[in-house]
Amino acid sequence: MIFTERLRGNPYLFLGPRPFREARLRSYVVTQHRLGRSLSEILKDRYVQRLGTVTFCWSVIQDPRTIAALEESLRSLEHHSS
Image 1 (cartoon, one colour):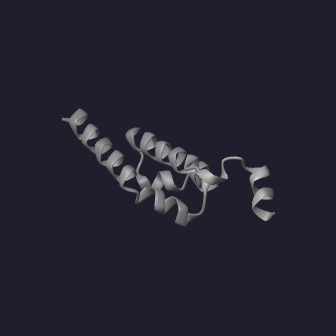
Image 2 (cartoon, rainbow, N blue to C red):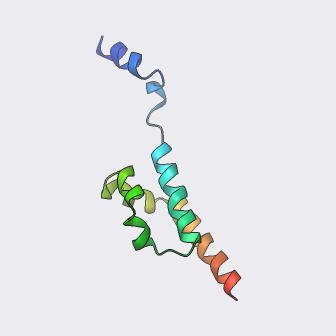
């Protein structure tokens, strides 16, 4: 009974959590970093703080996909500056 009530509120519950917030945060951080902002400055943004807790933000930052994107951003910045 409880499970069917939960399904009425979210028909996609069986798919598990949807990573939209993680993807939005990752995209925002990488975009801002490519614009030349430091990671510490980006993490102080109100937009970032509204997306989730400090723990959530750090888990997204430490995700291998985010790290790879930031490394690519750094390589791109180094390439353009030389």
